[in-house]
Length: 343
Image 1 (cartoon, rainbow, N blue to C red):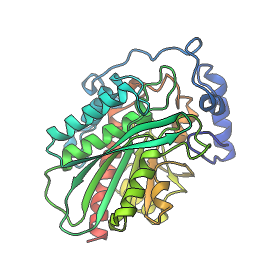
Image 2 (tube, helix red, strand yellow):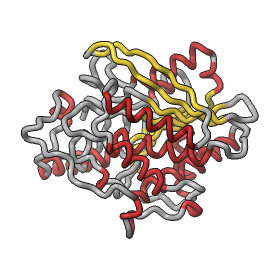
Image 3 (cartoon, helix red, strand yellow):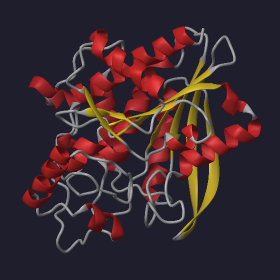
């Protein structure tokens, strides 16, 4: 099955489950329909009212204390995401994404982070669009770099606020930056990049209409000679949903996938980082195509199967502070393992 944002190969059982979900969720468009044209405001319901603070969420979806998740606070990551979602749809070049950029930069400044911005213009099927990558640079003792990335834009669709798809990755990166900026210097630098323009402006599979921010970053690093410093790239995309099921990505670097899954198993997250495989086209490809080890950590296949991907139902009530805590914990510990590997 091919869709127009990311490509995934499913087994027969998963395909049956996907078709069952598609038939039982009349409001959710098919993959082809959702990417070929914007959702119709006449037939698509507006996003539902949701809880907007992690403190309101109790029970199994509540985040454990940060002391239990390597210092990463899943509740804070959830609340950062809720703030991003409050700006509404955030496609590249929109007024809302400019508000989003201002918010991200203000938060990073309050954390005491060293921040660089890259303002660039991308030719797209809809014309030239101004975009912005935002990168936190946490220095290391050596020359190596561990790069953590995720996107913050949303697909241009009616009533699509992208809580999971575009929101959750940025919320996770903000919490990582809060925890890591000003921490004790490690061997390798850690760069945390908020990428613009991951979503297709018109059609994912047409004329490279996708991953503008990651391709821009990889190209700039290659031109400057800094790309050779990057030891590994960890990509977060769609990591916040309830009933989290993250599959191994076959388009990622095998040894890096193994490292992350060993970390998740050691931490007791086998139910969230599962043993099945999928192949997803995403921002990791801008780096793997240039020979840089990279991994895509995403719940995309599961979220799509539930009929929530690229629909107005991708709202905060579908997300769990605990899921942010689980993924954040795995990121923190995977970064620590990479520091040891490249010491």
